[in-house]
Amino acid sequence: MHTKESYATTKIAKEDTSDSREKITKTKEGRLLEKIDDDCLLINQIKGDFNKKRTNESSENVTTKPEHHEVEDDEEEESWRKQSEYYKNIDSKSFRQYELACDRVKQFYEEQHEKQTVAYNIQARINFKTKVRAKMSVWEGLEKLNRLLDESDPDTELSQIDHALQTAQAIRKDNKPRWFQLVGLIHDLGKLLYFFDSRGQWDVVGDTFPVGCKFLKKIIFSESFKKNPDILNPLYNTKYGIYSKHCGLDKVMLSWGHDEYMYHVAKNSSTLPAEALAMIRYHSFYPWHHEGAYSYLMNDHDKEMFEAVRAFNVYDLYSKIDEKYDVEELKEYYKDLIDEYFPSKIIDF
Ligand SMILES: [Fe+2]
Ligand SMILES: [Fe+2]
Image 1 (cartoon, helix red, strand yellow):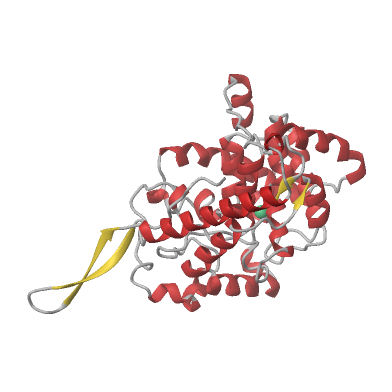
Image 2 (image 1 turned 135 degrees about the horizontal axis):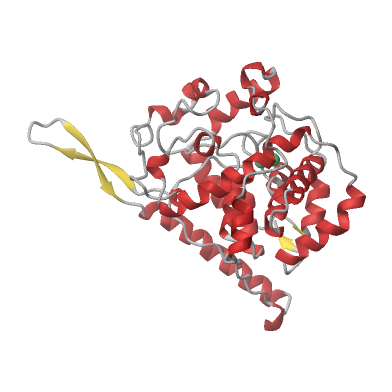
């Protein structure tokens, strides 16, 4: 069962004033979206109950949601925070060169920035919560994903499984905890959305950014937001928009894509710690973890997670120039690692 989230905290109400001009005020209100969310959860529950009855599932077959590990061990905690030895001399300026990016990348962002609206994002979350797209193991998911080439990425033309293994292996070579290595392996697994119900690549890949508040210049190719209808909506085009100061990123709708999707899949099916889940959820939120934007939406928990996401980003980005690994050679190691954190093996995607 998903944790209930409410995204909107305010709405605009029109008030008549004594001089008969209309005045726009904001009042605390998140009930409409919460109601939609509640309805989705209810539909899921009814569907689940119906399926259980139909297949005469016995109660012992009902799986319970796994508990998430906490990173408590001092030594383990220190080891994920430590700077990467493996990439300490890398030239970071040669990555994310969007000025030199090919037309494929530019066109991708034009489309993404036009179509990632609040309305679309609410619908995408409803779609996600009202069905299960596939049931398979994490490794099967990685193999399926291997057919996708990410149109938004200027740094690599490699297949997705190569990128997954490069990221995981770089983390492993730096002697980081096993949960961190697993994040390297699965952080892009949410790109499976492309094979399910996405409308293209624009709602699967690319940098992410909040919708429902002003699009900042720190977002890559930010000029292409001029075609996004939300910039004309007074609810959405202010600094805080539908959110409030330091409301916490958990309440903010980031543009829908593989990060948010995989975060929910991992949260529901794995025992990965909060740092791992944040790495998955925010790894494409470059305006935040790379440019320092939107700090006014963060709460104290986000400040802790910020460090984890930045620690992960080094491996996601720089491993793209590493050697290509032999999938068959590494398969058993990573299948064991998956089983350690995904106890039910076959999971809901
Ligand atoms: Fe990604
Ligand atoms: Fe990645």
